[in-house]
Each structure stands twice: as C-alpha cells, then as structure tokens.
Length: 304
Image (cartoon, rainbow, N blue to C red; front, side, top):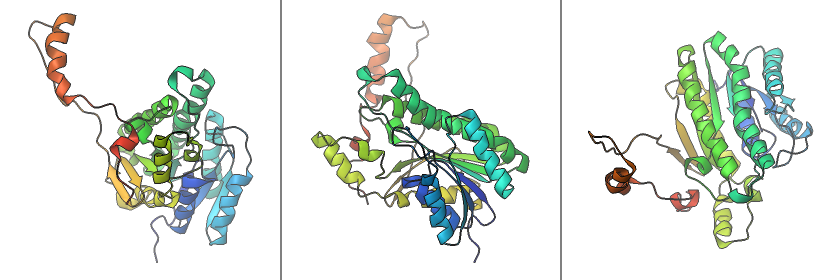
C-alpha cells in the first residue's frame, strides 16, 4: 500500500519529545526517512544530549522505519546547515522541514531579562529561519518541498507572562508567509500550525492561580499525537494547493486562523491633527477594536 510520504526525506526539529517526537514517528510510519533533531536540553534550552533524539530513532526503527539522530542547535547558523547537510548526505535529498524546536522562559514583562528574551527568540524564531534558510537552496533546486512551522496562540491571541514567546511565535507566522511568497515560484510551500498539546513546555506553567489551574486541566486532555496528522498532510503531495496558511489543532479540532487585514477606515480631506484623531478617528474606529484577550478566553470550551 502506498503511503503518503513514501520516498520523502523529512527533518523534524525538537523531535526528541512531545509534539516533535510524535510528528517524527508518524512521518516514518507514512514512509518518510526522518532526521530526528533535538539538542536534548531542558525546557529552557539549557544542557544537551544526543540520547534524546536517539531514543526516538530507536522507536522508529523498532517499527521498521528509517531515521537518523541529530543533536545540532538550530539557533546556530552553522548547526542548522550541518543538520540539513546530514539529511542530504545520509538520504540524498530533502522534501520537508518541520520547525518544531522551542523553549520557554516565561516571566512578567517588567521583570523579563534580556537573557530570557534572547534565548526564546533565538530558538523559536531564529531557529526557524536558520533551518529553513539552510534547506531552501535544496528545495529550490528540486522544484518541490514544504515547510511546516510551529506557531502559537500566545502570538496570535496573547498569553500572560509570554512576551518573548508570543513575539517569537508571531514572528514565525510572518516568516512563514514571506517564505511562501518567495518560494512559491519553486513549488515550495510554507504553512504554520498553532498546536494545543500538553508537553513538558506547557507543564512549566505554574499552577499558582485558579486561572492557570483551569488552563492546565484543559491542556492535559490534548495529547501531542493529535498534532501530527495535520503536519504530515501538509508535507505530502496531497496539499500542494495549501500555502501561507495558519492552522490550529486542539485535540480533534482543526482550525484555520484568519490573518490581519484592515477592518475599518476613516479619512478626512483636510488631513488629521492629534485633536481630530481623538475627536473623530478613534471614536469612529472604537466599535471595531479587538478586545484584550488571552488564548483561553477565545478557546473557552472544553477540547473536543
């Protein structure tokens, strides 16, 4: 029986645990040869060991699949290029990149350190750029390929204590859109997924408030394996008409997010002054303001 990723080679970053591991294993079950990348560090991005990726490789091989472990740091330009080179040297080609690697360093904004900002942006945003940029010439040359990047409702909607993470993940969405625009002529696609899943990163959310406790209980119902099917579908040839989109997966629900567009406008022939903005423009636009919401406020129902 033909499988959806037969003959394809796929890189999955952050694939040693959680969502990434489930994506890597399903990709292999669907016929792909998989490069399992994971630094092997903790949820803050500290430390590292190749054994984390090797465990997923062993699981794939035990089911008859093909995979190789890679411990490169995607936040490094050289590390990302070494990762892509491993895929090409080992399997002779590259067809899909899943940018899943991520770290969390939550903290309220007025106390956030530069180090915590840099660490999160380096992995979650720059890491996506590094790996995608390293892969792009190969995908261009073969005139095919697909990127899937992990975004977050922390960027799309917002969450408390995640200025660094939310900014990085919203950056990923813009990165994906612009990759899609630049690479469309070469039949290379780029899409995003905002996953809802209980992982070790989410488990770092403190249960010190009723709000956080309720949030954690809902998220615990959403297992990482629920994210993988959409990822595999987007990498495969059946989704060649799907490009520059932002999806969400929440247990058995799949969402398509809208993307920012103008919702209302005002104008004046005389031009604006600060006074006329306050008197006319803002009152006219106020009815279309977006409310200040957090992700759980928007996704308020129990996972289906």
